[in-house]
Amino acid sequence: MLHFLSRCGPGLALLLLSACQGYDVTLNERVVYSPPPLFRAFDITDDALRACVQQVIEDESITRAGQLESLNCSNAGIESIEGLQVFSGLTRVRLSDNRIRNLLALGELQQLQQLYLSNNRVVDPVPLYALEKLTTLDLDTNPALQCPAPGALSQVEQLSLPAHCPGDN
Image: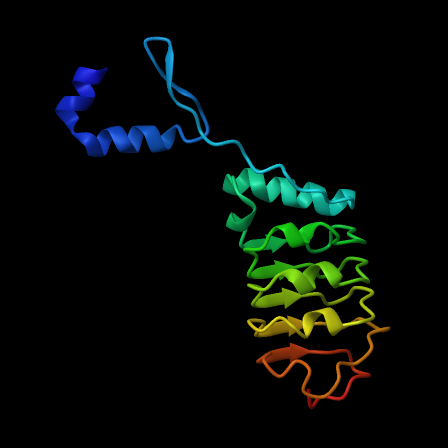
């Protein structure tokens, strides 16, 4: 096998090794490569959110918290997002059609650019005010939402609010 790889060049060897990304690679019964373990050092108490995050980690082979950039857990029965703040690299989060009320964990995600929370139970948008990179925010169909203070979300270019909130935010 080594002779074959040396004749075919290093490009083929890299291609073959990258195809085995999730597996140990052995040579003469010795492990020559082991992939890094998937990231598991998070504590999410909501079963539905934990299952969604675990699936994304497996699908995208996430090995560090900061590698997770996009999360789509819409219509998953999620009630709490506590613990999500460990994923500091998140830039896009879709959590529409759940039962989320408290947004404190999202207030710590400083890289967040797009956030979709329509059709939830969100009450207080204040934790989102400090997200300077947030450009898209959907809070539509949150009937108990306390409307954002004027100018509080001025960095947001695309803002969707429930009908009871004034449209000049």
